Amino acid sequence: MPRNNAKSKRAKRQAQAAASATTEESEATEAVESDSTLHCSTSHRKVTTSRADPVSLKIDVNSLRMSDVQLLHGPHWLNEALMNFYFAYLAEMKYKGNKDFLFITPEMGQCMLYMDEQELQALLVTQHDARRKPFIFIALGDSKSNELGGAYWSLLVVSRPDKCFFHFDSYGGNHTSTSIELMNNVKDVLDMRQARFRPMRCLQQSNGYDCGIHVICMADQIADYVNRYESVDGLPPLQLDVVKAKRSDLLKLIHSLGGRT
Image: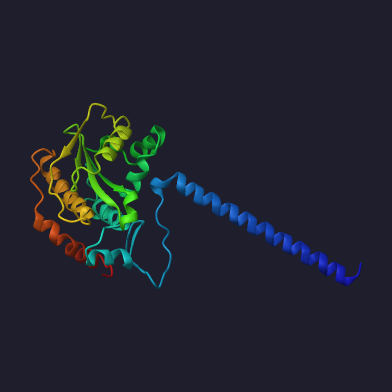
């Protein structure tokens, strides 16, 4: 066989092998991405190194980038990353070891709206032992609001002692239908079939961007209250000065945890 023909065939085989490897890698990547979508309750934003937008702080699998932190410096909507961070802080730091509380991030709460009973059972009962939790805090986000520059947030608190789903909405009940939908999705799985839905009167925001701040403040206040009194009933109203100071308080918290602000 001529040498040139041998080289040509060898090059052809190498090219075919490379093409096959590329195809397999692409299929594997698609499979991973598909799996992440199916199990969105445990998926998280992929952390990559970016000089333009570096990571400021990480708690467990929740990362804050500098662009997220900058939202706290001005009159901006809080995004999902900030809400996920704070609920992770409550669960993993402030109330770590407290077996009465379960904090559900917006990412997980959004997924729960679309899960079937078997998926909810695996997530809430098997993974988080939710039937043994007296109080469950769920941050609800409206992804449709992203078109306006952020997400609209409200807070759903599941109280087993009160046999109630308490909904706290700082913008006139804008999220009531979503919170009722989520309650109907999870109450059987939580073994709370007779629980009532109660929209709660709460401090209303005076602008169009502080809903996330209100949710964080209310989660703080309610967790502190039920930790002492074991019931949501009798909760005092949230004070406006607490809301006004919260952005600064969050920046101080991030800095105290070693993050850049």
